[in-house]
Length: 544
Image 1 (cartoon, helix red, strand yellow):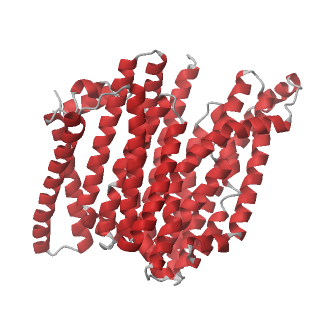
Image 2 (tube, rainbow, N blue to C red):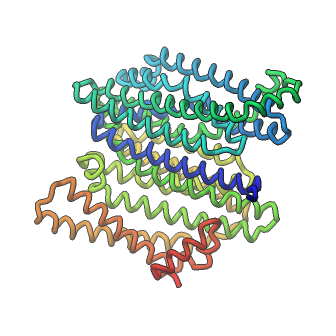
Image 3 (cartoon, rainbow, N blue to C red):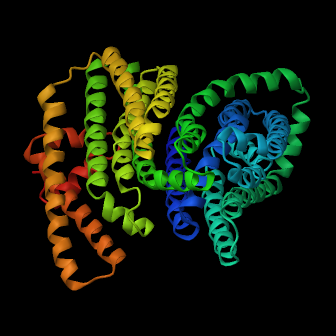
């Protein structure tokens, strides 16, 4: 049997990791719907106030270390130094355990102080509950990095899916138990955040099983390796090298959750300032976050698809093919601008039936409508960040997102006292737009890309307007028809929503080719997926 090449193993591994990441993110996003349905908007608000902070602390403790461990392990394995690879794992594991335990203890003890910073004491129990996951997750991250360095992505993929699945299962079980026993909102939210600890334990358990199997299989080989390599790398230089490699990745990862954290520290406090009680402010914050899973789904799709363009763009740049760089950049920008605009407009038009379908009533549908348009900026900023990385510009997108965070915070302070949660949603639109515009401007400057007003702006806006008009017409007709049938409100909203999605999708797909926004040649040229997508579209007679 022919052994696969290192490059093919890397591509296969990248695909496995991407698939696992999409699946785990999808599970993590969709779980917010039963959370609100069971716990209500008050619990939903507390959860969404605490979870970004937990994510931030977790990133500080772990972000960058899987990549660092993977790199250092791969280098030592390539040199035949398996003992050195194990030493990297040992040293990084000790450091990650210390970071996790210290971070968990500080977060648990400091819960009252953090609740004061959020200006809502109802978050204290949930902060303490989420802190229980911190000692578990960092060591899991280190083990994932070790196996990635061995070019074995299966353990990481399985543990990611197991972590999210158990997290959601534990959350739902605890929600049902606590809600049935009449627990207060803060304790129900604490039960929901405890799912992170349960998921972390499950993910770590999976990684330990893989590590035990690996040790059993390679015991003899490792014994020979330990005899052939007697030189031990000093602890502190290796620790320093690991940290220096991980730090820039960590800083880049922190920029994304900072925007969510801005809402955590400003919106509840500002709502209290205009007369809402603590409990009422959390209910309003929960209503505000109803649209967030839909925006996250847009961002998740953009993140998953954007990685297709990075290798192609980097390869074109290395070969000094500026024509390919420009065509790849133009395609990516056109696709994601169009998809982001269409998805945002679709959610905005269908906000009321969507709200009822997912969350049982239409509270906050106006805020959902505004929040939907953050998806445009988020989608464009994600794909342009990926393209800039392919061009070798890594730091600029992180800086732009940090600037967007500052804009978001300032606008929250200005707008929330006057417009409530609608003001926070509008601030998000402007914040993400800042990141998107700055990234796009830098990409145009680096690639010398020519932007055509009619082709790149007017036609997509016209298509989305026609699509929105078709969906609105369907909504009016369907509401008239379903009202006469006296259907249940949630069933009626579901039928209107699903019908609107189908009609909007057909109009959108047909309009792309009728208006010549995308040509057959451009679709075929898409990296990895172009030819298959073209065949699928030809099957449905959408292209010739």
